[in-house]
Image 1 (cartoon, rainbow, N blue to C red):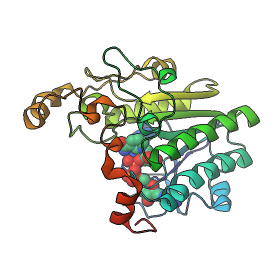
Image 2 (cartoon, rainbow, N blue to C red):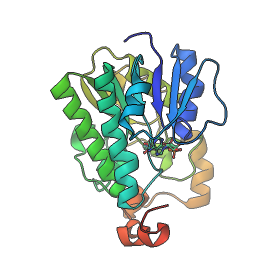
Image 3 (tube, rainbow, N blue to C red):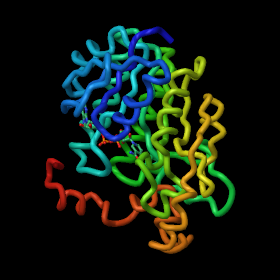
Image 4 (cartoon, rainbow, N blue to C red):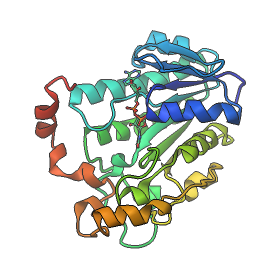
Length: 280
Ligand SMILES: NC(=O)c1ccc[n+]([C@@H]2O[C@H](COP(=O)([O-])OP(=O)(O)OC[C@H]3O[C@@H](n4cnc5c(N)ncnc54)[C@H](O)[C@@H]3O)[C@@H](O)[C@H]2O)c1
């Protein structure tokens, strides 16, 4: 770990804003990059408006950084051109830019949707190793590709790449499923801080959730990196269950890791009809 700033791509988004708020208290300086301007910059923060798929801009941004945190990407499912550019091209570029700039560590925002069609365990906790790649969407395919690219850069170039299979990183849980999958803002900062500090992690893939009472993901691998979650979705349970009912284990939303993302309304033709061929 060198003393340079952490380069955060997709810094203007929800997760980026949480990290930019919390990482400085953990001692990290910030360098931000997004296709849009930030609403406000933090003291000492450098921001660049650029496409994270622009290799020259990314090499420039990564030069002197201590690590790259790759968050850039379109939120949720989209058409293939949008997913391919905003997630896959940006991830390849982030890793390649880090390599060219001599940055040893990259943290990648993967997702549970890389494994979305995996059946949710009937009891007990699901380990990463027991959740093979079964993407539920093109978005999930992008996260599978992200994990594969990370693996390539570790094995071929000896870099350290930590893939965080994030559950639901929002200010608070708003669905019954999120009582299991929530990653609180505070724990988002703790998880990324652990991924940035863990000594020589090599290639690591870990679930990213809070210490939720109703969790069905095993946090042992994340804890082994040094992650110590402090939050739990349980205080939200009574209100959410009163509003939406107890989870039905036969409902695909609760029977599969990817929840709603496995439903037919995310079939490619449905998404294209909603978004148009180019996706936005
Ligand atoms: N929020 C979650 O629950 C969750 C769960 C799993 C994974 N993730 C992943 O974490 C990352 C961040 O998620 P988020 O919730 O903050 O999303 P978000 O949509 O709020 O933010 C994404 C940011 O990326 C930027 N962006 C998009 N394309 C870009 C490009 N080509 N170059 C530079 N910037 C670009 C957007 O402008 C936006 O500010 C994403 O990769 C997402 O897939 C999030």
